[in-house]
Length: 168
Image (cartoon, rainbow, N blue to C red):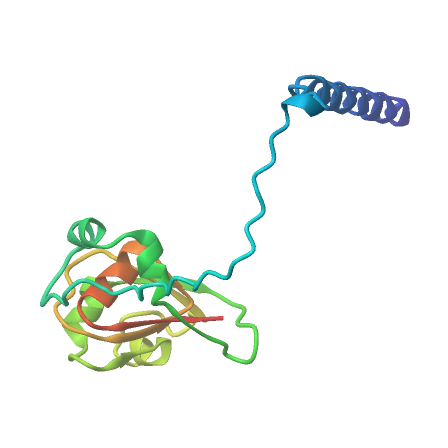
C-alpha cells in the first residue's frame, strides 16, 4: 500500500514538472527571422581597462558593529579575508567569542588564535572550532585566526587595521 502511494506521488510530481516546463516554453515570445537584428561585428582590439584596486577606508582607532556596517560593504570586506588551510579537518565542539572580550585581553598587533583564547581563559578548553562575533568595541589592530566570523566582526577587524584569517 505504501509503495502505491509513493508511486502515485512521484507520478503527480512528474506531471506537475512537465506542465511547468510546457508553460515556460509556450510563454516565450516568438520572433520571426525578419525582426531579428544582429549587432555589427567590429574587429579591432581594445585595450583592457585596468581594474582599479579596492581599498579600505581610513583605519579607525575604535569601532563597533553598527559603525562598521555603515563604513564598509559586505562584498569589499570579504575581499580582504585571508583563507588558511589547517591541513586537516577540525571536528568537535564549536564555540564563539565576542570582539569586545578579545579587545580587553589582547594588545595591538597580537595574533589571536583558539589556543591563545583557551590559555587566557576566554573559551572552554574543549572547544575545537571558534567563531568571532561583533559584540563590543574593538580599539586596536589584531590578526584574528578563527574558523568563522560574522560579517560585522570581519569589518571591525579590517577597519582597525587588523587581519582576518579564516581557517579551513
